[in-house]
Image 1 (cartoon, rainbow, N blue to C red):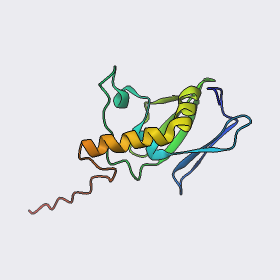
Image 2 (cartoon, rainbow, N blue to C red; image 1 turned 180 degrees about the vertical axis):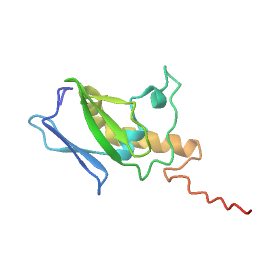
Image 3 (tube, one colour; image 1 turned 180 degrees about the horizontal axis):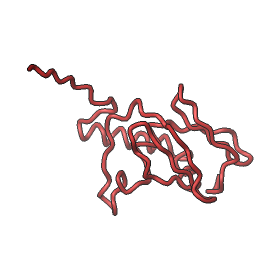
Length: 128
C-alpha cells in the first residue's frame, strides 16, 4: 500500500463504508463521512495552508458514484452533491494508514468550533 492502485474498490451503502483491497494486504475500510470531510478538493482543503474549510453535518453522508480517473485516482460523488475531489491512490493509502489520528484531529477541530457531525435539522415553520 505505497500509493499503488488497489486491486478492488467497493462501497457498502448500508454501512456507508468504502472497502479497498491493496495488493498483498487485508481489506481496509474508510467511512464515507471520513472521505467527505477530508476530501482532497480545493473546496475542503482550500488553496493553501490555513485555508481548510471545516466540514460539518456529514454524519449520514453516503457515496453515490465512484469513477476511475486515469490510472491514478478515483472521483467520489457524495449524496450531498460534493464531487470535486480526486482521491489518488497515494491519498487513499494515506487515509487508510492514518485514519485514527486524522479522525481524532477532525473531531478536535469540530469541538473547537462548537460544530457538530449531525446534519442541520432546524425546522422552519412558515405561517401564512
